[in-house]
Amino acid sequence: MTDAKFGIFIHWGVYSVPAWAPTTGTLNYAESYQWVQHVPNSTASQTWVHHKDTYGTNVTYEDFIPQWNADEWDPKDWLNLFMDAGAKYFVLTSKHHDGFSLFDTGKTSNRSSTNLGPMRDLVGELLGAAKQAPYKDSLVGSVYYSMPEWLNPDYAPYGFGSWPGGQAHNAYDYSLLEPYTGWIPVNDYIDDLQTPQMETLLFDVRYGSPILWCDIGGPSKMLGLAAKFYNTYAKRGQQVVLNDRCSIKEADMLTPELMKFSSILERKWEACEGLDPHSFGYNANRVWSEYKNSTTVLVSLFHVVCLTTEIISSI
Image (cartoon, rainbow, N blue to C red; front, side, top):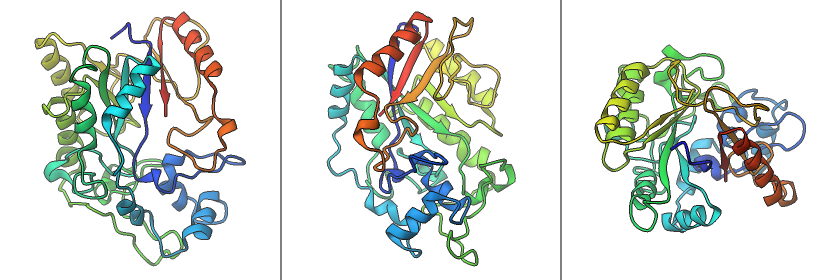
């Protein structure tokens, strides 16, 4: 995989319905809509104000789930676009910090696209299509996975910083608790949700992701899982990649976000940026003239290739 210099990063989920973040003042990621609507839950948050003015105080983030249906989505349209762009691999957000998964999460949770919203196994469809002709010899399909969930009630014992876990209070009436749609209470978040979900993405034949692009890190049993990941794929003669956000020191590449190193490093690294100047997910508040043009993207690609590394660009 060291020859793959250009990849596509896909942030797609429930946050694609409101698809909003400020473009001036304090900037937030559009894909962080759920969190920044709640923190701070006041006029200090532009997202809090936007949601109140656009949807009213009775609409919660959970109400966006049935509006995200993916009715017109064809995975082959994406794969054709990736090949035309010259990409050699892609990374799809299998689950972002809002805890909504795009794959079959089995008994760990019903908060997924197979049970709600699209009612489709979006990860399985995309990675499955990529393993077929004419894509299988040109593209490597893989997944991103958020290790914590902002507002999963079962993550509270492990919560830290901006990933506290615990059920959310309504952003406009703190006396009310918001639902966490599809949540199945488990005894232990790491043993009963995080680890089995990652095992599914890595070892289930429907997915079999050779790249595990973790995010945030935090408490986990990743060391044992990483050993199984490396050993299992080594027996098949397949290369794998583990990034540096999986909560362990062992990693194949660094993933600096919205920045690039200026000199050659001993370690492999991947420049992680989007076509949007700030967000990775779609931000309808961003005007098209503000997006990076092809010249800017190519200059970034040339820069990282000259430093013997690769770039992943979000769409």
